[in-house]
Every structure is written in C-alpha cells, then in structure tokens.
Length: 490
Length: 96
Image 1 (cartoon, helix red, strand yellow):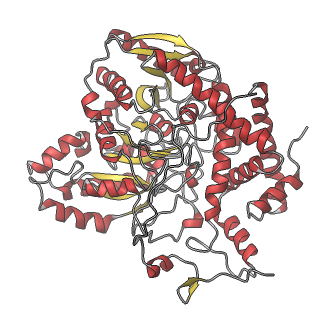
Image 2: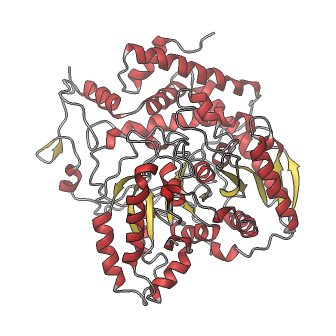
Image 3: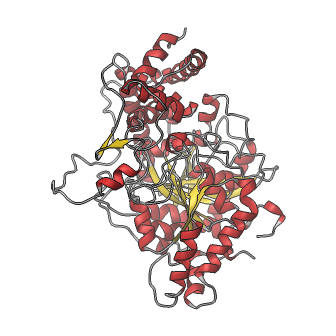
C-alpha cells in the first residue's frame, strides 16, 4: 500500500513516532514519479536533489517539531513562483526562467510549515485552458485513462495527486482551474473565497478572479492545507484581513438541518444523464444525512461564460504586457529595434490560446469598444454576483455538478475555443461572484471516469463548504477508488 | 455579419505587441469573431443603471506606509536578464 493512502495528519504522526522517515515519503514520491510520470506527464521540473537534502535534515528533527506540514511532500503548480526553482507557467517565454528571485507568499508559508517541495506541476500555459493541452511542453494525461484529458488549467496538480505521485498539491483557479481538473481526476479541489489566500507570487492571469487553492485526496487534508496557506498578506492588497478559522474543526460529519440550494440551471441542457444521476444520488444522500434541499434559480448563469471571457481576457492582456523580453524570460535573436524585439519575443514566446486571449482582451479594452464589451461584462458580473448573494441569504450552500460532462478525450475540443470554453460553464460563475467552491468525487461514468460534485458557499464561509463536502465524502466511498495506472496497486 | 475584420485583428495585434503572420490573421479573425458574436448575447440584458463590478470584496484604496526596504540585490535581478551592461538592462535601439 502506498504511504499516501494515509491522511496528512496520520503521516505527520508516523513521522514523529519515528515509524517512517521524511526520506521515505520523499522517495515514495520520486519512485512513483519514476514509475508513472512517463504516462501522466504531470511534472515539468523536479526538485529532487534539494528535496532529498531537506528530507535528511528534517529526519533529525522528528519527534520535536510542531510545524504543521512537517516533512510532507507537496507539488506546486508552475505559475507559483519558487525561489531558485525554475518557474515557467508552462510557457516558452519563461522557458529559461531558472532562477526566480523570491518565493510566492504561499510558498513561504509552505516552507515555514516545513513541507518538502517535490517539483513544479504542468498546466495550461499561463493557466489559460481546460485540458492541459495548452501546455507548451506536453499535455498531462488523466490517470484514470490516459486517452483522456486531466482537465485544466491545474491538470498537473490534480493528476499528480490522483496518480499517487504526491499526497497533495497547490493549484490556481480563475474560472474553474482547480475544481474542473479535481472533478476529472477524482480528487478534492477547493477554490477559496477571493482574497482568502495571498496571490503574491502567483503569475497573474486575471487578477480579479485568480485564487490559489489546495488539491488533495480527502476533504480533511484539503481543510488542513488551507489552514496553512490562508490569511492576510501585506504584499497582496486584495488579500482580506479576515480571521482564518480552524477549518478541520468544521468537519463534524453532521449536516442535520443544513439548507442546500440546487440551481435548476446547473442540471439543465448540456449536462449528461450520468452526471445528473450522480448529483441526484448525492442529494438523496444528503437527505439521508438530515439536510434539506430545494430547487432555486441563478437566472444569469447562461451569461457567465461570455462575461468571463471578456473580463479575464481583458485583465490578461494587461497582466501579460510584462513579458517583453527586457528583464527576464526569452528574448528574440537579432532584433533591430525595441518594437521589433517586443513583437517578436512575444510572438515566439506565447502559444496560440494566449495570443487569442491577449487579442480578445486588447480588443475589448480598446477605444470605441470598451463600453460595449468590457463595461457591459462588468455590469453583468454584478447581476451574476447578486444571483449568488440572493440565494445564499436563504441557504447554507449551493450544490450541483462541477462539470457538465466527465473528462473528454485528448484532441477532442482543442480546435474550437468556444466548445472548450463551454466546459467551464458551472465553475466560472463562482469566480465571478468571488465565493468559495469545492469539487468532491461523487461517482463514475460508464467509462470509469470520475464525476465531481460542486459545493459553493458564502464569502469566507469555507467552513460550511468543507462541512458539507466532508459529510458526503464520509458517507460514500468514491474518494477511496484509485486508478489502476502503471499496473501497480496503490 | 462579421464583427471583426482581418484589419481589426492586425491592429489589435500591433497594440498588443504581437506580430502575426497572414495565415494566423485569417484564423484569429474567424475565432475572435466567433467569440465576440457569442458574447453579443450580453446585449439581451438591460444593464441600465447597474453598477459595474471591478472587485468582489468591499475594498478601496488599500494603503501602507511608503517605507523603503531591502528587497533583492541588483546582481541577482540581472541574472535573469536576456542582456545587460554596466548594471542596467540592455535593449536594442529605441529610435528607428
């Protein structure tokens, strides 16, 4: 049995009771990566030498170190900056960014908590995509069936946990980029409330939507990691100065009296019968557990994808202006003038999806179109946000599917941007409203691919989201299923 | 009716400091036109008087004291630079 079948807190206890060593855990990661990453392709850069050195040091401190994540091996999405460890955001424009100068705030927090960084995880370039096919290196595959995508953009973060390469990882979520791959890979992924986790050192895509969050095998592990990474940071003026609760204490298993809202728009057209059935079965389970649910409406849901693509692309067009070939990253050869250098460096360094979104955003922000597209989308965002706030006045959580379908095949949607975008229709509204949302495993399709249940809560009420997710998880055994990757039992 | 012409795409690419080839311009024109056409659905909604959301939390002008502090060293900053000279980033000629 893999050591990673144990919870993070169990592993920590085993370390301190000297049943196992940190080196055992780190080797478990690298051995599994050696065994299966040729198929899964979840990692872009490994931190092996430094990780083993750190493990040896930590081994001497077992038994008397209270650090929360002491000795636990973690994977970090490659758009989160790590000092001295190559950080590319899966883009050619950062291919040579070997030596970042500082750690993101979340990485500082991991270091203080004494986790061990195993490596950097593959993703869609600059987090733009829903399948990991937009990585400029190679496409991560779904551990449940490598003909299928793992989802994206945090595809490497979800696939690495599902494949047993690491017990937990960090992803980022702008329009579903944690929850959608978590659903596709059968793991637990949370997008915290906007402002809950510092974005300092997260390579910015759409600053009003981006959040870093945990991807884990269980709700308990997820809550445990969020306790470490959440909190105010004076390096991120959009981080919120709101107290961080002990999320693990919310995991009582008791949801008696919990009031659940089920938006009719989330079980409508485009949602496959298998996904609907899995969600309906989950609602029945909640009834058995003593919760109640009602059908509600989030009437502006169908406008979320348009709103999101206008706003996120506009923000991206501004954020990605920093990649200019001057201070870091790749510069084109033999440019004659500064303008020529900018244009050629960016054209050579960015992939097609990134260029498409930069151009869409530049268009939406340009003179004569600003009011019609950008401002209009900001106004519709208000309507979408109001939908959520209205429902969440009367209900504790909103429940529905994470995605309309299980994972799709590699190559199936990559040629048509709009078809790809539609895949995020149930996750995008959550980012627009800024509320927290989680995906937990709730079933399997007839092809054996995981299905995710999405649970959404009020601003800064991750506690209710976790409580609902945990009670469901403990009453079912979907989270205990493992892919039969590499022929090994894990 | 197409909403975005090939000339629009070339202009936007220039504004975004991207150089695109002729055949790329054709493909991007079609794709961006599809996306913008789809996004026109927002016009179904009357948003007269609706306040635009720029930020989901109620935060305004977060300020801190402007105190200088040591961050990173100049030689470290230059390590990642494509080209540098005399402690400064070196770039091609700015004037044509």
